[in-house]
Image 1: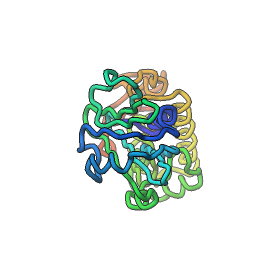
Image 2 (image 1 turned 120 degrees about the vertical axis):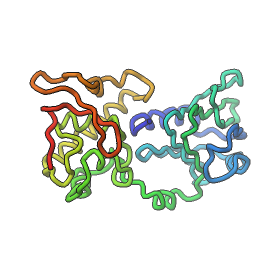
Image 3 (image 1 turned 90 degrees about the vertical axis):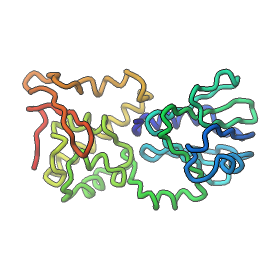
Image 4 (image 1 turned 180 degrees about the horizontal axis):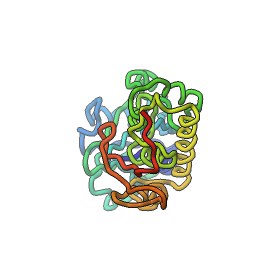
Length: 263
């Protein structure tokens, strides 16, 4: 599933192909992907509007409209944006598209239909209702440590909790903890302020590096941070093999003898 850096790549794509373009019409091919109204109503509300800006929080991307309403694009496992002009170029699993007055179209492609699209009259109300945590790239070291203090959950579970921290998913959580030499099942409250500060630092460096590389979840170019993540691999000379377990309900990779478990 796309994590914070991948969604940031979608953000840049939306800005390049949709920003400041007036919407002539919206064609909805699959009502089910619009989660809080009918496809017909969605198209009516967007007709004549202009995409005036974008906002990303964690894994959530919002198109800001010229009436200060928002369209939430949550990509699920297979969501994607595709810009095209000729109808023959439309993506195979397009669920809806914006048609702009300049003749270009911006389609939302989603083979597995796990994406969620919402039209929002009030963004702040939605953020409060969803209890979405602070963006992982925006949270300060002080606030990160404060939120972790005394928590009994595993450190991986802490990183994955989108109500605490928005944007980190399974792959990035494993990679961050590998760099910090901390076992994913370590109890969050057992880690020192120094260790938590290290996690915060590595998290933000890794996420920014991925953004700078225009990360996409479909690209093998992401191997720079997860190539060690192979069961039975020995990534470190003086460490054990990579093990696969379940932590916080998710498939988890860690390196025995390299990542220390803190109770």
